[in-house]
Image (cartoon, rainbow, N blue to C red; front, side):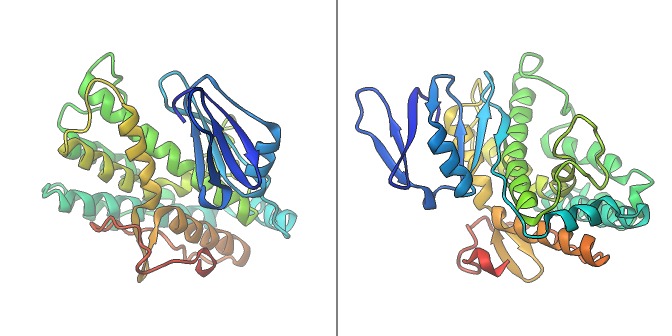
Length: 311
């Protein structure tokens, strides 16, 4: 929602009321997430409760239209305390192995995207992926990033550049940040549903971050956002600001096709598979994570996979 509106609940539907327009009613069952961009949006507490019951993520945005907060339901798990205890007792060696798997997957996906873009640096990244050690002790993630972003977006690109410093690079960063925030929210939702505490990370340990574990799990998924931003650049979608059309396009990342093992999933369902495999690894002390593999096909995956119960 990017224009003034009043949101309420009407017979299991989201009701959107705006001046001089007929009210729009959308079944809650058809909604995965809400993104509230306008400061003139109001909503009822009854609706918030219904969103929580329906397990719908609700993002709030700042004045730059970037997601700044997430409203998350308390998605109860019948073994929440047991899983939390196991998560807290996870040994340093286990964390080192899990992080090694995650970073190998991340760098491999980056290499696949560079290969698809016919960038010769992909061979270096493949070598870095194969050389990731326990806990990524040689910091191959940073070495890969130093090559990857410049190969993808140009030698002058920096992840720290803002729009007021360089419009093109700043817009790319704003788009990347927006896409990452959307994926991060979907992962947080999956973590809560699995009984894992999203604040207790494997590698991320910021005491002020409530979603350290989500920032661990998202790493192999970032490439899918990067690919979408590259596609938007090639299509000439970016103008002088991150437009509403740009932001709508970026929300489509949740439907992007993701390969896990021999199946293709929409990204938001793939994240469920990854999180559930992590929960199983923590509970059973195994390390067989189901992590995404970047693929060129960006269909919604429904021809291969349909039911969330299959994950």
